[in-house]
Length: 201
Image 1 (cartoon, one colour):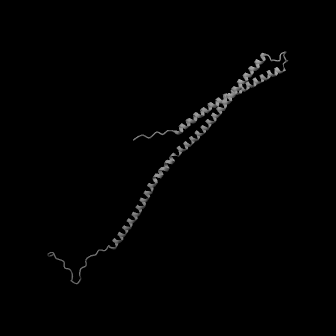
Image 2 (cartoon, one colour):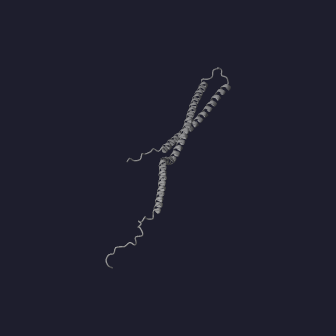
Image 3 (tube, rainbow, N blue to C red):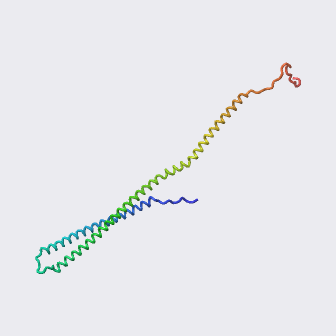
């Protein structure tokens, strides 16, 4: 005879998947926090560069007008450098914002997956708890025809027993009616019956 088949543990597998998804969600959340901190630093840098650029432009506007209408090469170089830095930082800020948006979407999807797996795990736990009930119900369904047959046999048995008692009763009544024996009768008038004698007494 073969051994019992080994059943997989869907509950354990589902819990393991939920733990893995939760761990991955925590990692993405930590990465998201880091990106937000770096984005905040970039925003501060953009603000500083903007203030510096504004200061240079304002300083150029309030500075005494030189003999030549063209600004100095040094001033133009500083402004160009600040503009390039500002553009680079703005590109980085845009990149980090896209990364944060992507991470937020991944976190949302992982939370949805975790919720679905949690609901599935609860459903499997309920199924596991209801298995004995299902087995009892199916056993009762299979035993129902047997119970009906046993009940029918018991009814037939009681009927036969009642008929047997009735037959026994009728036989007893008949026997009581026929209880006296029909003895042979002898004709009278011929005197006493002489019995044979066996020698002298």
